[in-house]
Each structure stands twice: as structure tokens, then as C-alpha cells.
Length: 573
Figure 1 (spheres, rainbow, N blue to C red):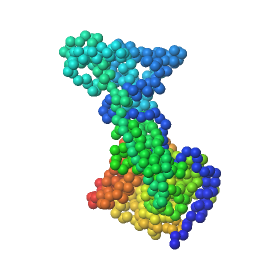
Figure 2 (spheres, rainbow, N blue to C red):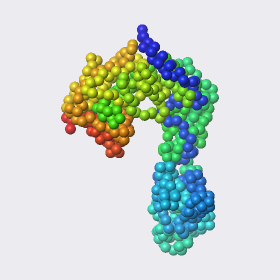
Figure 3 (spheres, rainbow, N blue to C red):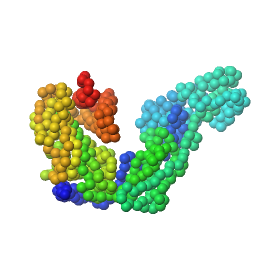
Figure 4 (cartoon, helix red, strand yellow):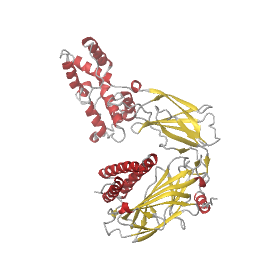
């Protein structure tokens, strides 16, 4: 019979949460997608260069009219009030036609600070800036000009096909001359050529309505808990869009059979889509592909607060010597914890914070540890500096049945030649444990076994074990060795620490991907090689972009190459 190791842990978590109320007014999100956004409604993005002037008009109305005026004549409210000088009159066809849309785009991107025009490269995505550039460029076209151009094409080149794309490097003056020369045999007057060019450019541009490939998205809500039923009129949300133009959330209700349908939804390869079902105060959501055969299924679950259903399934530790400017010499430790939920219900403590987040897992840090990693998008509540208690983190993401639930922690431990690593857990341990150390650091343990092949000649040592603990779950082992005997440990300042954390987080994410890949591969060795190659590529990119400390880069790279050489049976370079 399994004995409960949780009495003190439960008292601790109850005490920590004594100031927490019930669930807040907003539903807790049980999701693998970001939370809902409130940005502008999206539009389909062309797979080739084809600006959308309807979207450009929306952006112009929101961002530009105070200076440029609603018609683009440069008489906006700020100009009339004398706050800024009058900008270029965009309705002046002679001035506009001499410039190219590319010049327009560059001005929008970089701004003109001398004229108090801000740069928009960070506030607007590239597609949005092109939409705005072509909309504002074509403000110089009036109805008479376009009607004249349409007549020129119809009467003088009836068999000609209008161009689908006009490169933005051409100004209207240049493009009019090109058309006249190549299609009209230089027979058009300057006025006729200008009208033909304007009509052709306007015809090549798209609007949201023209480009929308709208359709229906159907699906069904299923209940994953034995005996559970999907309530009638369950609210279903669809979130779609992308980072450049924002996301939109629409809602519908499932019928008595759990089926639902969203109509008139823009379908685009450039969009991300996620479906969510609201059940018992939680939003169960998942990314979907509109064209997928089974992508429209959403599974909801009842909840349990029985801690025995959750166990620690994997523990990975990466240990490097480091000197921090504020803390001194010690060990930098990156830890990945993988939890497994054996039930057919989501696991949470049943206690909530006032902002709607729930307390799910309590993770205690090793004795003496100082947390280095920041909050992961509001996921963790960190408990520090409580007398007599270890620093801890409360994970507010419920543990889903049958899914990998990872927690990544980064912290510092003081080190002066020897250290006893101790960490208690609040869930059963049935885990594969690995400890990887650099700079000839060693582990002293009666339960961890060294992988001799990994450490040979690399300065990297790896220890592993399979550990099962039903009572008083914890891990404990000694660390020894002089990190300066073979190579100097890293010296990390407060300025370089964020880059170090970002780089190691990226490595940890790559490792998690590799671990997941290995689980899915029949050939475990082949899967691990593929994962390590991906991890090396990520490391190189992080180093090139300055996101990872130079010393850490070399240590990680050497370790990864040693591991690859071992798996592939080749000598390490």
C-alpha cells in the first residue's frame, strides 16, 4: 500500500495559500496556447507580395489622421493646432508620382524624426507597413484619373492582361514610361500613360474582401473523464491570427452532442488557430489546423486534487561553476522536472488566487538555492525568504492527463570545493534522473552511477539512475571538485546574466524537444542523435545572436559534440 508523503507538504501549501480566495471571475486557462488577445481583427496574409489597402486604410485611420488628415492632405488636427508642421500632401499626384512605394515604406519604417514622424517598425508588422504604404501612396488617385486609365486599357490595349504585381521599386512616373514603351508602343501621351499606370497599380492591389478565403470550422467537444458528460450549450472559443496583425476571439456554443461550427472564418496558412471549451470555470484549449481531419476535437476533463495521481517522472540537472557579481562563486544549475498525471482528470490543488490562477504544484528549491530565472509569463508564484522554509515556486498550470508537464528552474548555489545537494519533493518520485556537470566537477552518491564514456576527455561528467520513492521523496548527493583545475569558471555580471538565462532556457527547450522526440522514436539512439543535432543548431544560433555567454557556449558545444561522437561511434573532434 502506498503511504502518503504529503502531510507536511499539504500543511505548507495550505499555509502559503491562506490568503488565496476561490477562483477569480476569469476562467483559468488550461492551455497549450497563449492567452486571448484583444488586438485588431485579423486579415488573411498573402503568400506573395500583395499589399491589402483595405487594411492600410484601417491603420491610417487609427494611426495617421492626427497629422496627415483623413484625406491625406496634411491638414490633421495636430497640424491645424500648430503642434507639428504640415507634412507632404498625399493627394498631390505630381509630388507622389515622382516617388516609389518602396520609398514610402522606408519612411514609414524608419520615420522622420526631424519632422516629428515616429518610426513604425516596432509598432507595425512588415505586412502592415506595406499595407499602409500602398494605401497612402494611392490617396493621390481620384475617380477621374482611374476612370481615364480604365478607358486607356480598354480602348488602346483590349487584349492586354493587367499586371498582377507591380514591383514597389517603380514610381508612378517610371512605371508609366515602362507601360507606354512596352505595351502601348510609346503612343500614349504623358497624361494617358499616368492614368494607365495608376489604374494598373490600383487593380493589382488587394482588399481584405478580395483576398479572404473564408470558410467554416467544425468540431466536437469530448469529455475525457470516465462517466463525464459535455454540458449542453458549452461555450466554445476560436482564437485566430498571428503576431504581426494580432488575434481575434469569437465564440459559439456546442449542441447537445457536443458539436459546434464557426462560419465565415478567414482560412490562411499564415494564421495560428486555437480552440477552447469553457468547462467548470476552466478554458480547455489546444492549437488546431483548420484543414486537419481530427484537429477540431477539444477534450475537457473533470478535476482532482488528489496528489497521489501526480508523480515526478524525470529529473534533469545541468551544473556549471559560475561567479555572479552579486552572489559570488557558486554553481549555476538548470533543472528540468517532468511530471506525470496517471488519472483521467486534470490535477490541481483546488485553491485559487484572486486573479483566476490556480495553485497546482508546489516545487521546493534545493537547500540554499537562490532562484535566477524569472516568471514564465505569469505561470509561477515564487515564495522566497520565509524563515525556516525552503524557497519554493507554485506552478499555476494544472497537470493534464497523458501530457508532458515540464517545469524549468534556474538557480545558484554557493560552492567552495564541496557541496551536498538536497532537494525535497511534494509528489512521489518514479523518475529517470540525470546529473550533468562541467569543469571536472564530480558527484559522490551511492545511487547515481557515472556514465564513464560521456566524461572521457571532455571535462563533462554525466550521472544517471532510475529512482522510485513513495515516502519522504527527495534527492541528495555530494558535489566535489575544483572548477578552476582544468578551465576557469564563468564570471557573470548583472548585465550578462539575462543573456545567460536566455541561452540556457533555449538549450533546455531544445533538450525537452529532443526528449519528446526520443519517446516517439522506435529507434531511441537515432532519435537522440536527431535531438542533439537540433540542439547544436540552436546553440550556434543563440551564440551568433549574442543570446548566450561565450564561455557557456563552448562548454555546451563541447559536451554536445562528445555525446554525438559517443552515439555515432566516432572520435570526438
